[in-house]
View (cartoon, rainbow, N blue to C red):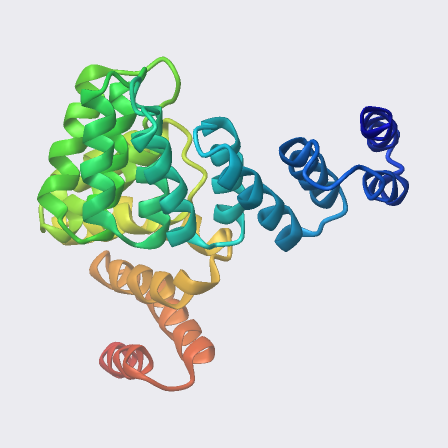
Length: 293
């Protein structure tokens, strides 16, 4: 009878009769099919959007079968979606302890969780461990190290890891985002020529971040390429990137003044006053307007 009730509940689960399935399972003798019931109930709770019950059922199953890395990986993914990064990392710890790091996948997954948790140094260690363990795409390991290094503001390492990723090459992804962060790193290192070159590569490869034009425009300004800077800041303005709008108008106004297009410069600086109303950027634009009048 226990087996029949289990099969009945499974069929009801497959036909999305979840309440009926849970009722069928109550007829099964206590201690019988315990592990199987935890897994099936986890599936039902997940379909019903009951996240906490899903997590609880999977955790209960893993107490009985701690060696099941596939289920641990499923649980870790749910925990990541809930932004419970430390709990997810514990699951990846167990996966690696169970021998799940043989091809580098386990290290790569734990590294990604650490990256989301803000443990950038720990993420870098795991990304490199994934590479050493034979991860299928070593370029991705270095690219992720570059991102983690950028987030921890270690700009020389961003460039170093990025160059290693590009040298290896990858069949699985392109490098527009990597070039973007390498460009920002060089910008922070005040290597403006290199920054502009990297940002240009990112833009030419089709990065969907208008911010790349803003930062390349900033590099062009420092290097005296005012016309190139005007073109980049115009793209940002035309795209109406709110967080960069005032700065783009201000910078373009400065470029226009340098190009002796004073009417355009005044127009842009006046726009800054309209957008800002107060603050340092407002005062700087007002001062420049007074000088131009």
